[in-house]
Amino acid sequence: MRPNRLCCVLSTAALALCVAVSSAETTEAKEVSSHSTAADSATLCVEFGEHALVSVLNYGDDTPSLPALPAPQPPKKILDGHLCTLVPRRTPIPAQGCVRERQGCRGVCYTGVYDESASICMPSPGDRCVGSVAPVRVLFTHVGVCKRDCSCTDLDRLTRPIETTIDEWRCNI
Image 1 (cartoon, one colour):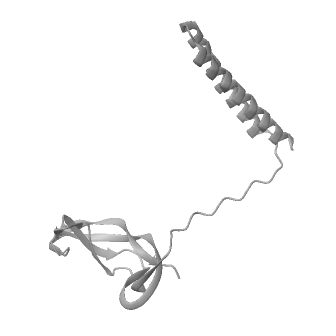
Image 2 (cartoon, rainbow, N blue to C red; image 1 turned 180 degrees about the vertical axis):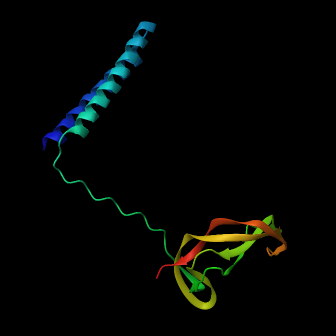
Image 3 (cartoon, helix red, strand yellow; image 1 turned 90 degrees about the vertical axis):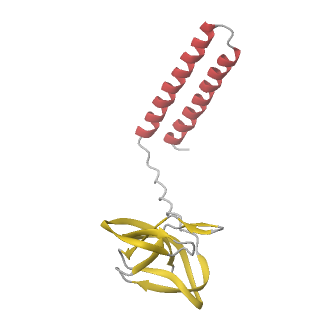
């Protein structure tokens, strides 16, 4: 065992003993003065732990650090009836924002365009697309009202487009 690791193990054990003693004092306390003694012990434990941690971190350790773990990948799914399609920037997006209920849709909806090119799993009977949900930048240019069939109607042009992201099934080629 290297000195730095030994120091860390000893510091951890001492800190655990300190916390246990402080906890026992608090449990057994019968008077107000005993409570303050337990609180003082807890404060000393924290200070001791901080000092031990700083000494471990400042100790010259020549052990190599572990490489960072890769970011988790979103789960992939096979989508039947979809085709991986490159959608160019400025392509219109389907209406967004309608809330689906048993009686149909309601709420406010937005339409606009993709603000970046993206490979997206688009509906296409008889095809298959492997993808995962990921954000795509879009510009909402119009606002409207959702009809029962979830179409967007009574569209008004926004004074300024809204730059945002929406989640789409992006192709994992």
